[in-house]
Length: 582
Image (tube, rainbow, N blue to C red; front, side):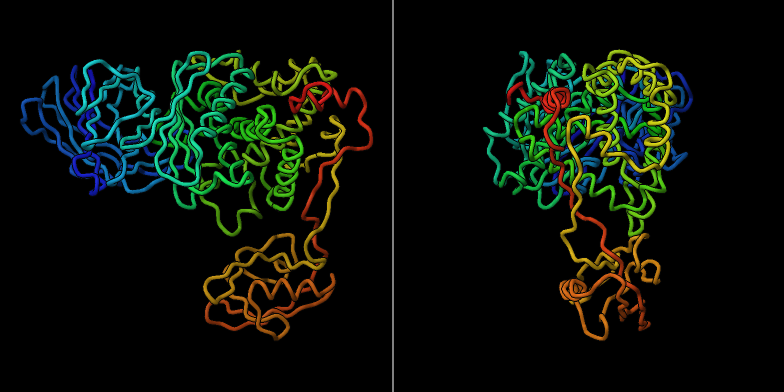
């Protein structure tokens, strides 16, 4: 038996105290390892850097020798004993969904940052006791065990994966509750802002119901939403039977701001099925010490990003017209990134560990997001399946097919060929029908054919230019009174002229400018006009001449292409969940 005890005797110290008791030891030495990353966030984070005050002893208190054998591993010399105990502290003062946080107001913990595992014994049932600060409650999706009281709570986990896949919120948070299909759902709400509790509960319940209908049932016996209201930040991280979401505390009003909250809720809940149960073969069982490479994050995150907004339309929480606006914004965003011509979706997925979470001023020139392009490719795959099947089948059916054929107990989706074969099966086409689509849009960098895809539902793209006619390819940022080059697009004239990110912009054609004046002066120029920029590069004063180009279209409207045919109208209504005649 392996049991954990977590306590927080001095919350203002930001130190969690962890104790692990291990029995059934039959080796002269035993390694304990702290994960270097957390599932769902694909970057090595080296959580071991926050560990301090490690000790090892027998159950009766006799010290045992230990030493570190790697950055993330502590080796205990057991001396022949069958039981031992380790204690350590973890500094937790980073409030994100990927880390742990402890202060005088609450304790939030992501298990991968705190709980070491006993090497070779991650499949065993575990027990966790949580001793919160005085007056605090403990909320988690782990199963409670009879025996706890007001001073501590006891939980069980079927294995180590479940233990670290169940975040815990400790504090005086509000606890909102509702049921769907008699299954309890809780919302642990920490922080205050302009939220409406009743609206949060009603809309979250509706999202659960629609996603339940999408997949056919809820795959859990209870579910927990941990919701942090914070200042100016956001993000979410999915777990098997719970989620941690962070939103700006003032983002619940007006409606356009509120959309970000319900979109995040929809996105992370969809992961209950897509990622936490349906997964690529390399994402389980996890290697917590190193990268777990997959080329399929485009499906895991991209399909989830496609459905997060689409299912809000089917929920009735945003209008079809608003959805088309959001979809158009996504297309504009991808088309403004030169990196779309260099990095494929498969490459973006594989390189998530070194690129996605570490963006820099060159990222838009060299890479794409598997969230953004993945969502748009899933849109086009959805349209292709609908076209090929005469409107009878869709990406919905493909997701349900994959979910049924690659259960959580299995080995996961094979990396090569499985999704294409499943799409062809669902669409009722011959093998190889979707070869070019997958080769060009997922494995390659061919421009996406939005016009062909959206014609399926009677929509066309109308590109517009809302900004100035002349274009430099520069993005600026103000840093106090200094105007700095934030980034330089690789397909723009400033890049060809040799302007660098972080150059300080002083003047345009001899006249001092800041960001606002620079754009105002450009609006007065025509494409083909040469302009002289005065810049500081470090401490060196330079003048660089560039020739302004015609600005690319920067706005898009998706609109009906004349009168829709009966077939187009039927597919359009089914796609958006609009009842006939609506």
